[in-house]
Amino acid sequence: MPLLRSFLRLVAAASVLVLLLAVTLVAVLRSTSLGDYVRRSVITGLEKSTGGRADIQSFGFDWQNLTVHMRSLTLHGTERAGEPPLLSVPSLDVQLKVLSLLRRQVQIQSLSVQSPHIRIAVQADGFTNLPGPGVDASSVDGLVGQLFNLHIPYVEIRNGEALVNNRRIPLDLASRNVSLALRYRQAQQHFEMAMHADNLRFHWNAERYDGAVSLNALLWRNGLSIQDARFNNTDLHLALNGHLKGFTNPTVDWHLESRWASSEVARTLGIQKDLYGGVVAVEGSGHQSPNAPLTFAGNLTAQALTARIDGTTLHNATIVSPLTADLAGLRLTKAVVTTPELRFVGQADLTNFRNLHVSGQLHRVNVPAVISQRLAISTTASGLVELSATLFPHERDLTVSTDLQLAAGSGSLPASGDVHFSYGQRTGTLELRPSRLVLP
Image (cartoon, rainbow, N blue to C red; front, side, top):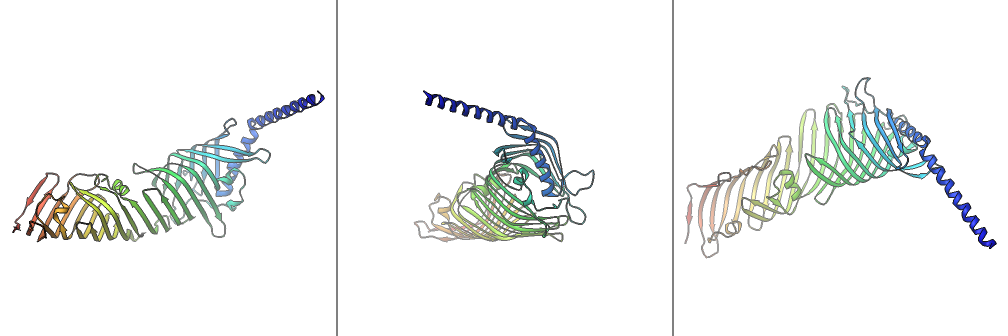
């Protein structure tokens, strides 16, 4: 029995110790000391890391859910008194995980930002209101140090916007597993930023996009250098690098490599029912300066496409062409289109990125194969073809005009001659101009 009594006393003592530790833990979490520490870390860290002036009008700490609630967070850059700040956030919630109470170590679990407003103002000399910190951001300790070298399982930004020289960029996104490293290099007077997100979800032009994003960039007061930016999902792969000099009258040079599933191209152009299967790759370089409008020049390659043109389906199509683009539209300057049934060489113009015009030469097209063998004749066609249509929005206003020469095939009913016709999809009319058909 003495042994049993000793064991019971040991259990009782351990229970009292656990109870005291639990009471102490609750007392620490419910006290304002941890909340005050976090608030001071946020303001001090922001100011040290950015060189700006930070303010938080309202700050709360939910000890039960370990959530920081910040209201009216403001960060001022170098803007003049009375001007809107660099950053204003009406509501920001940060959920934390306590790593060590004794060492006051916490980790960010999720970040929710509501209606943030970022304003980057460009001054007459080309510099912006971005501040330059007086210390290297890597020297900042505590919670805000994580904001500049962080890994967060979940981040969301809702109903926000960024104004860059009065150009509005909507900010509405969510992502899992976000990492961000931001450093200020005093000697070079620039920020270094590295960002990665496993599953970023955002909207652009009313369309939703999901994918992995990575970015490595340098930012200084009068320029931006994107060393490497990538977006990847199952349908779209983008890789971009480039430089911007001068925010007031920018000079921009960039290089793009992209690979699109045809379904993504069709969605962009609003022709989902007419283009499917295969991939489209675009690679090239762009330039814009105060004395030169935006231009892009490169190459387009498409493989294994399936296209439907008013009831006629072309399978396994390949397109190769030099490509140029500007604000007025896109041009394929020497497009070569091949399928098992035809070969076409010509050019295509997509004016205002919605009105398509194609002209060129068909070469020995197997006519029965293209029109699904609805004719008993055996013939191939070569000659001039012109095609026009409105792609976005899809108006079903396709028009086709041809001047074709027919060559007799090797089938049972070979045909030759000349065929000249026009077709209008909107009215469904086929106009046959003076033509000649020779049969055996």
